[in-house]
Length: 263
Image 1 (cartoon, rainbow, N blue to C red):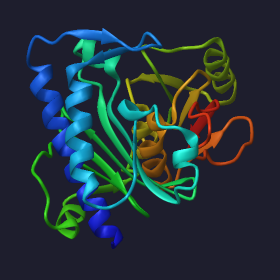
Image 2: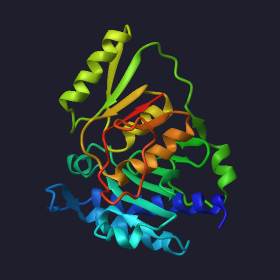
Image 3: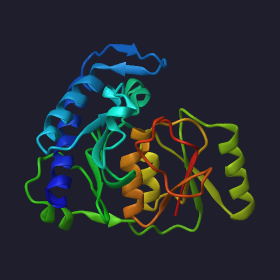
Image 4: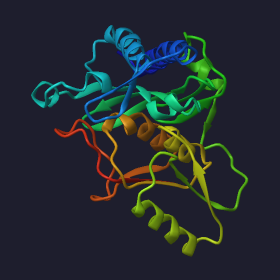
């Protein structure tokens, strides 16, 4: 199947997931807790079903956060598959601050090569194959990828600023992250902190609204895969802090190493 079709259908799958999320978001929803104590809502489950049902006909395997119990022996030889986080930023969802996303990535030979991130509340859409784009206020299913690209903003967008911006998280700020920020303050005359939830932190670097996103705290592969493809498409990098090489995917342990997103 050609890459345009893969990207188009990944976008449409993300839109369907976002629709299911909003249906729950605009209701009185209940919150459960997973084994790792992180929150789970009906929105996660419904988005997972909508996305996987849409992607299944494309014929590629799917590894979703909500289906993560799959054994490594079953997936270790996958050369091409979808990695999905149906609702990234469940804590942000529960707080009702709107900063949660749908993440879909195409993984090929361990590398994230295509990404879609959709923000259901603002209807902002980020997507990439070789290049990265953003469309604001978008929620209609697409039938023509070229028309969508022509109406999009190619990333990074032009940013008129002289300050150095580090993007961080409202929910997670480790001592190592604070140390990194302090180091940047010694290097750059002006350093500002931009707080965002979920994979929007990676999108801020892709857009050019931030210069760096240090993450020296735990994340899982589905938290970063789509964002990494979009960051790469914008000309920036997601670097494994230990190896100083690009982050890789479909490891036996799906826990990410610390990483740095930088432009």
